[in-house]
Length: 494
Image (cartoon, rainbow, N blue to C red; front, side, top):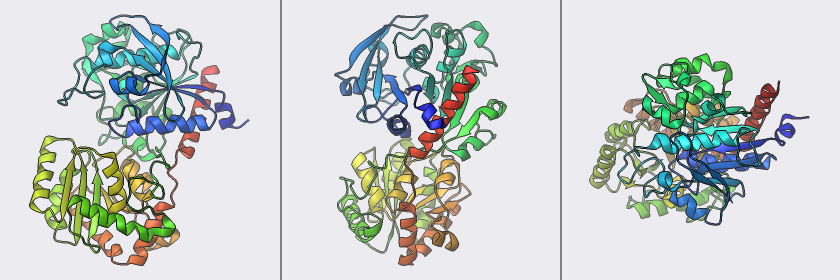
């Protein structure tokens, strides 16, 4: 029997702090919507567990109560509500008004400050997830595999290994190792963690408690969201202080590249575009460039290389590299359209640059789903100069839209963008431009490479079509997860 057929018998609890469109702050929200749907399409019995934020409760207003969760240790009581995501995948909503019913986002208040009780908010999520994957489950449905995502859920494997009966095997997916869920060690008592776990061979991390370390230490398997990132987190440069632990568990570590929703990101059917197009009608991409220039107040210029950026404005994303490179870039036939928010200093810097040269630079601070799609379609090339990028999704969106990405050679960017060469172009492998050093000069050099190809419209169209032909759907990655689940189950049953 094939691994996929075996996996179809498995019940998988996919626990996440966010899931689009109900709650989303970044790529994890998109992954949490798309991957469970792809796993369900393979026949797996998947259920998503997420907190009952106001947006979630509103979206799942017809959900019905299926269980009461009694208070335990220092964690409050809660209810489990069952509904369905827009994809049709079943969802369990953890309803606890004292922890989740707030006006801010999933992790921070309206001023961007972390909630002071995040340890309890996500400790409860982790504790309930672990119970649902053990003989202590309050439901008849009981998970065979617990699939955890990032630090807000990473305490669940510790709960499973530290006393719950009939514990299912667990895996923790690292979407970004830099976010580690670090709290004072004395919160462990309220979380119900036993004293024997409060040491370096456990949840303790430099005198504090780390949710992510707990997951890395106690989970049966670790998955990084791209093969290259799986290698990088074993190094000092990208291990964020946890490379030693990751290295000791290297035999339990895998890298599986994220996919994208190929229906939501499809230039042939995208409702946000002025003119729809595909690889066979690539000439219809041009009206989207003109429409974007008009919408953002950029000069109407067919010959300028319009660079798009949709990004968090942070050091990780290399935003400062682009700012420092602007004098050189503006000496070339280049325009730039940016959408994003983040660090206040970067937001202000982009406002000032756009105000100084409005016909060449447009900066929209914040996030707008419609505009994100229009930038992907209207830009000629897409810039992602990240210092590190565990996977990245925008470089996949841009290739889907025939907008070659200009990216730094790191993490999932390496695994999803084929660097330009003449031979690679004709083999169908080249789909963008990679650069190695995290410097403004290296970025400018990559843009110069792009400008040279852009001047040859036949070569540029071939490059665009190469990217549009790549398959970034979830099918292949979901299959790899399914095979991993089967292997985990076999070890647990042995």
